[in-house]
Length: 286
Image 1 (cartoon, rainbow, N blue to C red):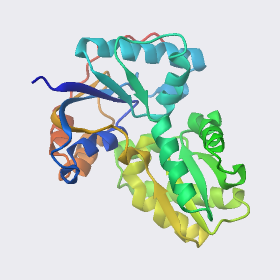
Image 2: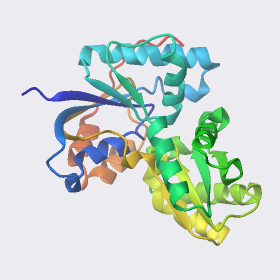
Image 3: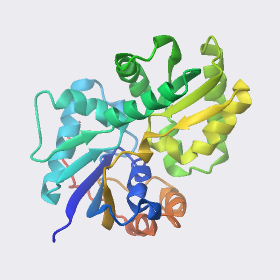
């Protein structure tokens, strides 16, 4: 029987945190095997989707990326990136590719709403890129689910995803996260009995223990992590894996991200080791 082809798409390497769960040995063999294709939609070195001039430019470029997936004949595209999922929310109102697409937003909202319902004394801080935080989409969706607005906070962390992509273990990562903890401490009033951190950027999962440590140190209260990467992707396990990108890997990423997955998903580490830029992967019209 032919395996289904599942594309995991992100603007960078953060979505590998989702791809990694397709290799989880604890998931069991009852999951359907698939051919897993990682599609890195980062357009060009030094300029990602958050640097584009406006929403229409983002939509046009993401449409190009989705059209670039057509030769792979996917049965499903999972948009791992929160920023691109927000772009997809707009794009899908007037254009559809010839395959189904699912963004991470609904799954992330489900995870955060469930955690907040289980812990009514907790507040949540939604952490994402600048554009994810500015969109206000997650707070609005959580309020639609009955979560009080006073329990919901957002913080944009510009530039952090790029830092994590080069080296999740770099000392500068802890320094940057500690500064975001201080910034959040100044903003959040009143301080809840417990703070949940919604990691609404796939890259942020690379540093999940550091987020917890630094926010507990700063706030002096229990801190929990809500990582949507853990549950997005359906009932599949990877039988084959390939990596595709227009651009070369960021400096350090081949070794550092490869090392991160070496034990848990060696197929990902091997694909990164052999990765080469594919400039014709999708059209660049920016």
